[in-house]
Image 1 (cartoon, protein in one colour):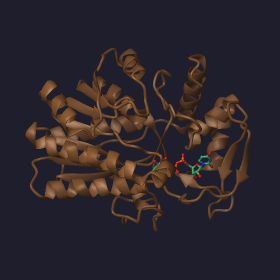
Image 2 (cartoon, rainbow, N blue to C red):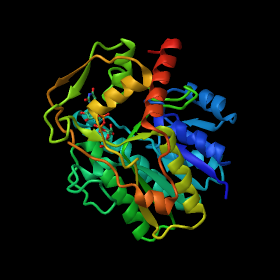
Image 3 (tube, rainbow, N blue to C red):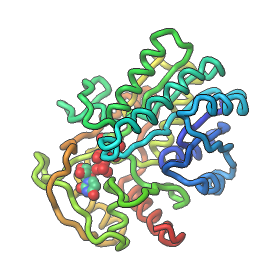
Length: 344
Ligand code: UFG
């Protein structure tokens, strides 16, 4: 079934790639975004990539009246993919209330409005951060939820609980929680990608900015972890592959294939890569030498985490496909494109 999908945060990094994949699969998309961490130009670029202009509403999901207005205006929304959220771990420690308000009130508004407007399901953008440092690797969906390291991480845990409680109370909705590992890369067209404001906190934008000479040196946070080369290990998932997981989740909801009304899937490659391995792979894949040095550990970092994605592979029918080399080349091409456009 093809549906009308509301994508909150649809001009953001993962949101924009997901909009394109939904359109390619034949769905109609309505984007809502307050543009707090993205720009309206992204809608133009989505249109350039897919050939279809999605509807766009500049609204804040925490504003219940505005969201009611959106559902009145765009009648017949069948499902929601909820990305809209503040996502900087460090900032969340400094401004916890901002994070709790933005991330939690938005979800509550959507869950309240869904039954009123007969919206069947919601796909929620969760994170492997809910596992903390898992006791067993690779981590499965059965692993215990660990105490959150930051207010940001806590909002992901709380939101998962809010969805479970709402469904358990008899709300006629279904949900799929996708726990993303580390999303990286950009669209192969170099028209969509990650646009961090100011100094990037995440590895890949910092790395590509260093490769371009915008930053002097990439600091590798910690060389004395209990890992083969001493640097932290993550599961880096290509953003287009990740976007496709949402299309599978929407199909599962529409086709009534869920085994439970709330299901959870790890979205990762199943491969752990250390920071140093990632740097060397980037150098090989792009031919660009990186200036880097090992510095002290970053407080709050998990030593190592990677996914067991078998549940997503077997039940959702989704699998990561893009090689890490292609993913890193896409991130590099995007960085060069930003330079061409005079953005960075
Ligand atoms: N790192 C560096 N130098 C940098 C930036 C990062 O060495 O300049 C290292 C980090 O220490 C970590 C790895 O690169 O080992 C990845 O760091 P990121 O900041 O890119 O990603 P995180 O794994 O810390 O966090 C990401 C998302 C969060 C999410 C979390 C889930 O940013 O939103 O994954 O584990 F919650």
